[in-house]
Length: 367
Image (cartoon, rainbow, N blue to C red; front, side, top):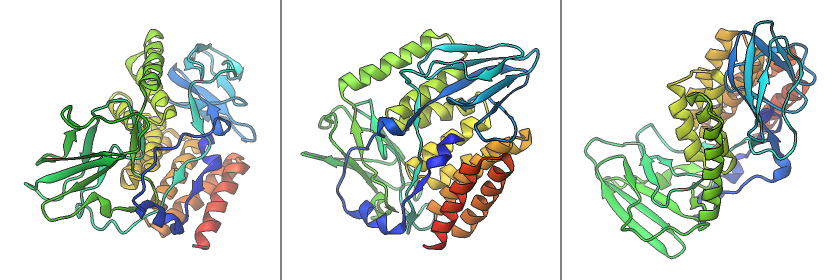
């Protein structure tokens, strides 16, 4: 996957940044770092794509993201449908061979060309602290976002603390989720907020050691309306439900609404177990530092790509898996996955992917 060509890994010296207590709004990527994504939302029969430099074509699956420069090959009797980066539709007709038949201008569906993996250390055994699941490292549209975390012990009471700027609110519950209530002080757009969960024993989500800023911020009404307008445009395309959810997830991700993107993709997994969807879900979990969840998705994606015989997908999923394992502190497992990814990229003829895998291995050797 092209997202892998610019993968960046934050070294362990950045861990102190995550413990400084200062919260900032999640940062959006620069436009220059974004690539227009044309998504396969429906196909029947066999079709394949080939990136520049590849030695062979690779089968497409539901959710495959195609970009400018890719070549397509549609078998006789096969058909497909792309949602282009500008939210137009492009049909893939039987026997088509050529480039991606989508406009290059004004992309709406974009992905940054790098996935930042922030190393995580010292969280302790599973269940030892309540780990914040959402909202973390994300923008939100809802001024009353749902706050979720992992349980520690049955029957415990959790104290939920939200603060930022001049806002300071606390609530309690025995559940593992709590909507930010309408009676609480109003969240202000663009203001960075933080969340801490503490159980009866004093164990806090703040004990999670990570370089990632786990704060969140509310989109302005204008920005939220723009996102809603794009989602309405997707519905107007009259896609199958799974196709619509896939495109919605990309819209959310493009606006750093990571919690919404994860929710959309999670609901999609029940409709389609395409490895491309599982891999994308792994990307989002990795972006917010939930490496255990990311590893599960990458492993499932890897199994799916392996069953389908898709070398490019196997290499991409192994790269993501290795980076998530590194983020989890599993250096030996990470090196094994990255070495496998590098070999598969080389077999495919993807020199850039192979070089990226080796560069990360070299960096790990210097840790």
